[in-house]
Image (cartoon, rainbow, N blue to C red; front, top):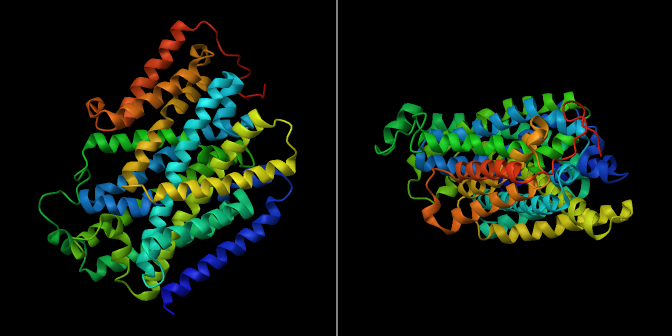
Length: 472
């Protein structure tokens, strides 16, 4: 029995032990299960934010990208940190004041029913795409860590079982408490792994000297281009404000002040991990120039001391666990709250509602596993999916800061335009006149919103939008 195998088994056992403890705190109704009873302190909020951000894309995906474009791939995490920072300053406290649960609920509260329907379709799609990528990375990690026990497919299935199981047991409490352990493990593993990798290969100058001369591997832009990096910041700031994961975390805080501070501390935790993983991606480029880029980070770590490699790869897997749990919970909340309870059975009992939540999480877990088998390119796929949050963020910002421009049809048509623009980007290459779809999304969504403001005379009903936001 290898040391790495023992480390992974111990970590899995610890996660389920934490989840079983969390199950008692999550008992007592859907608010406890989905929002931690709105009792998340600053530490738990920060750990949840960092755990959500530092997942497959922020570790495996960054190393995969660095394998081709250089250390500039680490700007992805910097962009996520900027998103958490903006969310903390602009929106986290307001979500907690509103005492809402989802963006679709907010859309119907201030706009109309069709705005709620189209937004929930878009947000669930985003959640499913991102969650599927966690399985892809989980398969890469486990198959590299324990090739005698896991194939790539077997690693994805095992990851799915753990991700879904933990979420089903304890809800947001499982995610929050597990993330404290996972984030600590991520820092320990990634920092130790990076330092030992660099030392083992003779230092950064030696690594730089062995890299191909065609790219500025250690430059601030590298092989990316400034427009791409700016696009990352635009995507991550956009999605941080309205994706269900961040919204759910903010709504679970004990107070608006706690929500704000938790996101600010979370931003600090997110920032450095990407550049550390990018360094290991470059080390993999030197040591294994012909491997599949997705395997860059797991492969380089396996060359380290067995204990260090076991802890580091367990840390990377921990990043996937922490992200996937929050995403699955968010997707389940969107379906149960904004589809089933709103349109199918509004008089549902609390116990039945909990059953629907757990069943939804299980079914969506299976769907995302299927999607994982068909995903290509972790970072590219994720960034395209997250671009869809542009419409939600734009509507939210206008609702809070410029309600006079909001009309009853604004949410529906802005979201619909965003969906059509992203679909066109995927199907018609001639539409791709920008470096990233996020630029097209903002242009189309803003133009649509302003057009509706001119053409639709029915203004939204606002209540105390300038300060405390009341439930209507």
